[in-house]
Length: 235
Image (cartoon, rainbow, N blue to C red):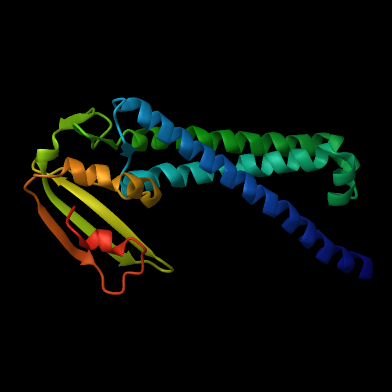
């Protein structure tokens, strides 16, 4: 009983050591996939585009399926790496010889099948959500609200309202910068602030002389973002 009990803490530590790199691999796969989506969206926009992306809702439907799809591949990758190197294989599993047996291979095949099944479900969702996007150019705007609509052309003069928000989540503040067009189309261009903030001068320049309503009532008191003043000032 003592020997069995002594193994349990060691097993828990080993599982934790495997979990950490698995999460790192999942994060790497997710970030790589998100980057590829961004590149694909940029290719769908005219060459003069200075900002392309999706609104927050469409972005969520891109990120969440990608994260789920990366789980199985993360464990597969780390498990294969750990057990393909003899010193690591002996460290992570004292009974490493069983990894050449049918039972282990069967479990790996099952994990691969599960991962591929999740990926097959995630890909259509991610692709459909990625088709909802905008392209901002100095000469105008392209916006596709639904996969079947195609990119609709707008001029900057079609911007009827700019609505900014800053709201408190569970642990941090989040902001939005909505462009509302005269036909009712509405999309947020601040899903990724690090991408939007550097090109803000170009946006302000394109809006120069445009008659639009600026609404910053959604910026809450206490908004603790470094670019809070930008959300409160008319472009």
